[in-house]
Each structure stands twice: as C-alpha cells, then as structure tokens.
Figure 1: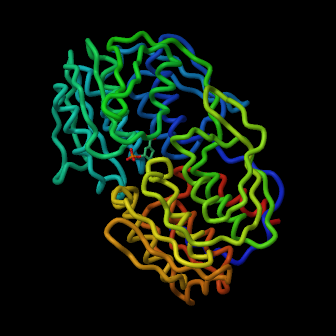
Figure 2: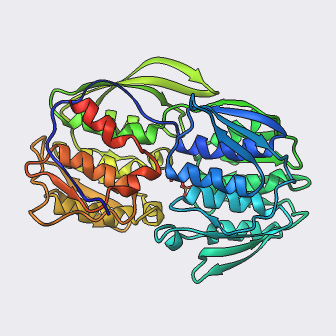
Figure 3: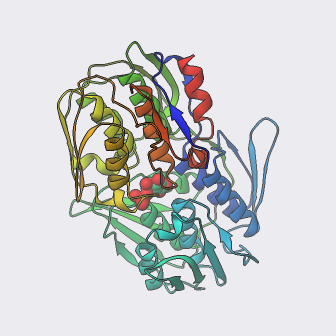
Length: 439
Ligand code: S3P
C-alpha cells in the first residue's frame, strides 16, 4: 500500500494530455474482439481496468497486441464464436469490465466465472443478473448478488424490452450487448439519459440500432445476430481524468493550464457545467470531432469559486466526478449542496461516506446526507490538511485517491493518502502529469 502525502503546490501551468477515455477503451476492445478481421485502436487507456478487459477478451479467443508505437491491434473471432474461458475471468477493480462482459456472455452458450478484488466483490451485480436472467442466462452469485459468480449463457437467448430501474450505462450496455447475439430485437428504455458510448460505437462497428423517444424516455433497440466490421478507433482523452486537473487549476492560485483532447460528449460533460456554475473559468478551445466523439482543448484558470446547489439532473453526466467536485466545493466561498447521489454509494467505494470522512479529516466542513453532501467552503483559504500520523482512507477507490491528492495541493500541512496504488486502474500517468504541471 504506497502511502503518499500531497503538499501545497505551485500554480499549474503549461499544456497536458490526459490518457484515453476508460469507457470508450473498454468498449473498443470488446467490440473489436467481436468483429471478424483486424481492428486498430489508438489512444487506448493502458490502465489496469482496461488491461483486465483485454486479458478477458484474450481468454475468450481474441488476439490482442500492442505495437511499439502504442497502437493496439485486435483480431476478432466474430460474434457467436467466443470460446469458453478455461479459467475464471479476473476483473480486478473494474465494474465496467464485469457488467458489460456479463451482458456479452449471457447470450453465448457456455459458462464463465467472474472474480474481482475486495472492492469489486462488494458491488451489486443483481442489477445485471435480473435482466440477463429474463433473457435466459442463469447465475450462481455470492451472497447478496456479488462476485465471485458463475454465469451460464443462453443460446439462443430471448430478446426483451427492459426499463432501467437505475440510471446506469453499465446496465444499459449489458442488456444491449446480450442483445447483439440474440435473435430479434432487444430494447432498453432509459428514463434518464446516461453515457451513450455503447450506442455510438456499436453503430460505428456496423450493428443496427434505433434510438427514439417514448413518453419522454429514451428507447434504444438493437437488432440481434449482428455482423460487426473491424474499425479504426481513436480514443479521445477521458473527461473524468481531466476533471482532477480542472479542479486543481481552478483552486491553486495563479494556475493557467490547457488540457488537450478532452472528450466533451454531452452525456459526460456535466462537470464542466457544474464548475462554471460555481464561477470556474473553463474555456473550450478548438471544438472538433475525434473518432465520432466531440472533443475540445480546455483552458482552465484559477478562479474564485462560489458554492452552488448542483442540479440533480446533471448527476448522470458527471456521476464519476463528484469526489473531485466536493474538493472544489471545500475551497469555494459559501455552501454547496449536492443531492440525488444514491448511486455514488455503490461505486468502487461508498463515495459519499468515503469523501465525507476524507475531507473532514483534511479539515473541511462537510455534512453527510443519504443522497449527497453539504459542504461549507473556505472561500479559497487552504484546508488545514491531515494531522501528523493520520491519513485518509481511499478504500481501493482510484477517484478518492486522486481527489484527495488535489485537496492536498491546497492544504497547509499536506494531505496524506493511505494508498495511491488504485490510481493505476484508470490514470497511470497521474503522478507524473501532476509533478510536470506544477514544476
Ligand atoms: C460506466 C458507467 C458508470 C460509471 C463508470 C463507467 C461505463 O457506471 O460510473 O465509471 O463505462 O458504462 P454506472 O453505469 O454504474 O453508473
């Protein structure tokens, strides 16, 4: 468990590039593995979560290699020709790998066992087990519907129409991926729009999808037994990784940075709106399209932030960014209230409780509610930091580690974080980029 103390930092300046989008990286490996022929992927996130997806797809029969220039080459076996894995699929810390692959394998006629680390093994899988069981798959899960679990796929599976009981792109994607190898049309009704990378990318790979509206809800239908065609995928930078540098630049006096090539898909860009609402100066330069996704370079300057009531309607488009938004709120003038965050309790950690404890330990004024936090900010004064000998608990959660690292950059005594290892799941270059930008 590498502990680290993050000390008050110089202004952040210069130009940085964050690694590829995690959601798009997972999907590019999975979909390329289902296309017959060679796909190439540029800008793939080489974090542990995505590497877990790569090794699972290899176990299922795909050929996946990285060349010296950093391009990934994937030779797919074709939909329906995946092989039964000989060993358990070890999903590490990655909920996305697990839930999307459970969907994909639910319509293949073999068994697969999924395992994961202590964090992943505590996360709810019933949300995917339920619709996938309706499609004909069966499951033997650990108590409470958790990993380790065994899946018995159905061949053929039965198409369903499923209305999402929680706003979750992972559940939506699991059902759509099960629908890929299911005869007929499988549909998902989404009361609240969540990230749409699965829909965009499957269309790009040649699947037939219809996206419409029904009584104000999104209706997504996929035609089964699709033929996917190999693609050249370019992965844009991850807005969820960029968010740590956005907040750091906003709260460290004198900062002025450009974060290049950040994905600005509407279903992901909520953090930019929330930070602007708080008075953050975030400018989008050179708006363009990369690999079918809107992208911009973001210029972010130190700003006098003010507290705000964050609209719960923004939650799905910034669901992973609340830990670092809480840090911005802790440095803002006045009170920030967040609500509608129940889903944060079932992420890599319970992010409401973990951030409440971590920020309080670092001297912030935080009140925890069932569905969010109320934070009274310092008005720009540095946080006290953690006391000597104390360190915040990251609970195997990369976003807690990085958020509290950012908090440490504006603290009097520094913020000690008990374990920085989880950062490698999503942002292996985080520490280097941080020291570079502050240098
Ligand atoms: C993701 C969906 C979100 C998000 C996760 C990535 C995806 O999870 O938190 O980091 O790639 O589909 P939920 O679907 O559980 O909200």
